[in-house]
Length: 151
Image (tube, rainbow, N blue to C red; front, side):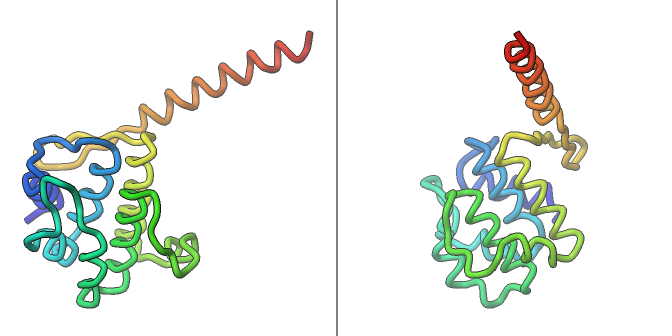
C-alpha cells in the first residue's frame, strides 16, 4: 500500500472521508507514513470514530524502529497538543532520517495551518498557499504599524 492508500484507510477507520481538522490530518499523515506505523495504528481499538488512542499505541510501540517511535511521538504531540517529551524534540527532529524528517516537518505545517494538501492521482500534493497568505498579512500589518509609529 502507498502512503496515500494507508492515509485513506486510517480516515475510514475514523469514519471520515476527509479529516475533521488539522490535528486529525497531521496525525493520520504521520501514522500512515510507513507500514510499521500503519500496522500499529490500524490495529483494532487504536483509531475509532471517537478518536485516536495514542496512549495505547505508545504502550505497543516497542516493535517500532527508533525513527518511527519518534514519529509516533510527533503525531501524538501534534494531535493532542501535549504528551511527554523525555528528549529535546528539536534534537530528535534533527537526527531523523531524511524521509522521517520531511514527514515530521510536513505534519507540523499541516497542524499549524501553514501547509495544505490534496490527493491527486494517488499522490499527496502540498501547497504553501496558507503560509504565503499568512506571511502577506504579516507584512501588510507590519507596514501599517511602521506607518503609524512614524507619525
